[in-house]
Amino acid sequence: MKNNRRTFIKLAGIAAAGLAVAPKAMASGSAAPVKTNPEAVHAEHWAMVIDTTKLHTEEEIAELAGICHSIHNVPNIEGKKEVKWLWADEYGHTFPEQENPHLSEEVHHRSFPLLCNHCENPPCVRVCPTKATYKRPDGIVAMDYHRCIGCRYCMAGCPYGSRSFNWGEPRLHMDLAKLNPEFPTRMRGVVEKCNFCVERLAVGKMPACVEASHGAIVFGDLSDPDSDVRKVLREKFTIRRKPTAGTEPSVYYII
Amino acid sequence: MKMQNGFAIIAGLIIFIGMITAPFAVGTMTKEYKQPELKMPVGEKECIESKEFMRTEHMQLLNDWRDWALRDGKRVYTNHAGKEFVISLQNTCMKCHNNKADFCDKCHTDAGVSPYCWDCHIQPEGLK
Ligand code: SF4
Ligand code: SF4
Ligand code: SF4
Image (cartoon, rainbow over all chains, first blue to last red):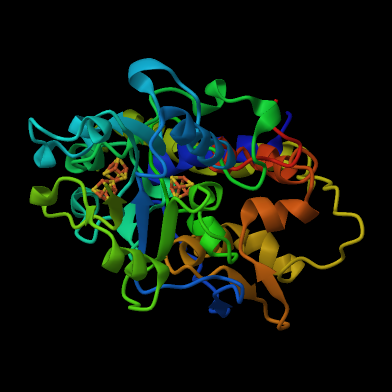
């Protein structure tokens, strides 16, 4: 007989059926010390300011999305099953509560870069039954794909459409020769979204879209009055998406 | 005293005992279990913890690593000898064990387990 251990396990199953008891021995974890990477950049509250006077064409935004999607192995799917971390939309969809019939033509015709707002009060976290979506102490709303059960409550909870569900096998929609081998892909049945590039912050880098934006996106610590984000917020008029939702987005737009 | 339904009881008992002892009976009839032969990384002698620990606890360790890195944002692990490692399955473990087929799969296939790590993490051989 081949593969004895397997056979043994199968037969042990029969034996267990006779006994109907399965003793479970749980190994306890080790208490080895862990710490943050010394190069990592820290903040009490990460936030982003996007200057839409500098960054507002569909091509420019598509370029940033391309970079974000390629480093994060985001599948490229057309149509309703689209998966997106960074994308563009028009004024009316971006700021539906801040529309008026006589808005400047120019502003009305801009494209706006959209991503997860890393809300201070995120409904997606509140509704996630498994805590696969959680808020880190530094304000980043992160996802642990290992725990996501694909219930999509978070998608229903997010007022900004910032989340995408992998309806099919994401790897079928990627150029396998051009994967980023440093970052995992996702699997079927799991929700995904922008992660504020936590994996880059952890090694001291700025988010990829910030780096590629030629200064149109500022990223930094909202709780530090001397930070770059606070500086631009002081100097420029900014709005956030859907203020009545009460989610307190950490992404601000200079109009 | 005469046993009621004696035949059924005895037959039932024999079947029951047969089921319970089946693994041992068949186990001794088949040949002995042999550990699979793994291809160890060239140039690296020590894993992040002892071989014995890794053999039995790597799943628990990976579970802890995941939580430390993702939840606590702590991505540097100091082992029992004081050596530091970046917490990452794909970028630390698989840089030494640079062939999933020759290392991970050997035991996993043998033990009949198929961990779904590779549904997301990219094996060093690349995706086919
Ligand atoms: S934008 Fe949506 S997904 Fe992102 S934190 Fe806010 S509610 Fe959650
Ligand atoms: S789909 Fe995943 S992340 Fe979203 S609510 Fe369900 S378990 Fe949480
Ligand atoms: S912060 Fe990072 S993950 Fe989020 S949109 Fe920008 S590049 Fe993508």
